[in-house]
Image (cartoon, rainbow, N blue to C red):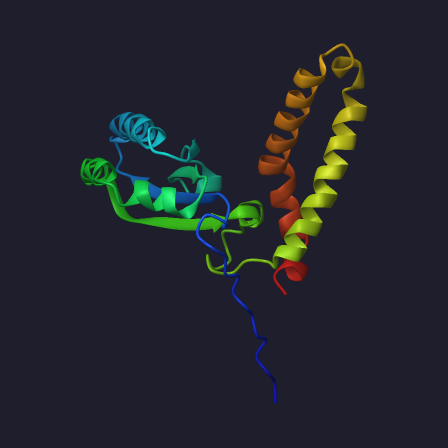
Length: 194
């Protein structure tokens, strides 16, 4: 007789949940790409005027995105994200979208560290434990900071402290987001999600 593993949800006070990351994938109708690009520019501009908006990225159709556009936006907390998502402004922008896309949009949400550990083949609700995520991120951040410092020491040496730090942080975040974390997450998937 097997016993089900108990998973205790993380409960926190409003505002303590950390940044919220939302990704929305959409299939754009053939021939509507230019109009959709204009729509994306407009909706990003509208969202950026809302409190707590931390930025937006757009992934254009490719094999990696299943040939769909993916908009990824972040807010500093759940309340500010909801304020944007339930706004009349956003509703007006979504109404303009109907003739440009086909099928339903696929939405994924993550809070805090979960964004780094997203695997598209796993259910949206399934996330590794915060302890495992923190451990992996500490190791990856440490290794990347040391590697960047060693590899680019001659270039970084003459820079001011602030510019050197900015350069290292930008390189680290880009490497983590697009190169390291997707591979580490796949490599450690069985342990992370057990």
